Image 1 (cartoon, rainbow, N blue to C red):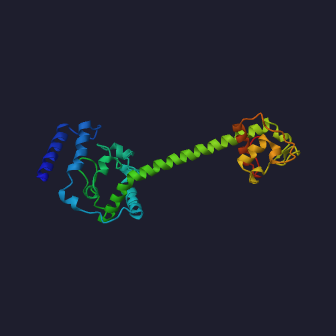
Image 2: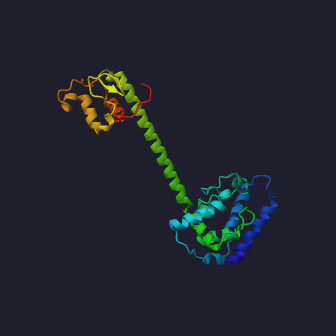
Image 3: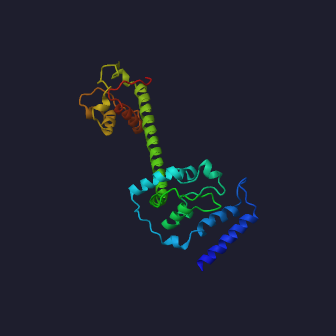
Length: 261
């Protein structure tokens, strides 16, 4: 019964495509695209659904499947499976996004059958050159593509966060450098051989192991942290400004400061 139903649906698809005068010289209509995609769902024979993937969804198998994918599938579907390649987009209909629910709803046996046999009217070829063993591993990799996509997005977000944090830290240090000059710290302290000698040399301040809390507290009340200190309290600076000045001093670890002074 199901086989008869599939035959009828394929006949209808073929008739619709022929009556719409399909051509590869222009983009397909929405109806053509829908019918071509539908063809992928109805061509899989019933017996294919009884096949079982002999390989586990393990990291090793997925890695092996990825190598096969990059050699045979990435040209059309892209390295990430989204199909955003010149070749893939030039197909009518375009190469499918393998991370999409449409593809991921197929079971392993159905994906295996499509890889091995292809689908007419869609540009998906029959990959008889790929062995059954490699085809099953390829299926495992295709199954992992949405996770790979999610991991890539997470990694990209983390990379962006780190870049912003680094930029924020650099901005903090740069403003601290400005405050160091504005507040006249160089009149009493040396930094890279320049400045006064009334107070301690700050060239290696960042290597002394003093915490941010200690330095900010010292700025606010020097004698409470260093008895007998003649350094004036920095009451004219806000906590945020003291934090930037501290960040600048903690970045001084004896390296030559090549930046503008």
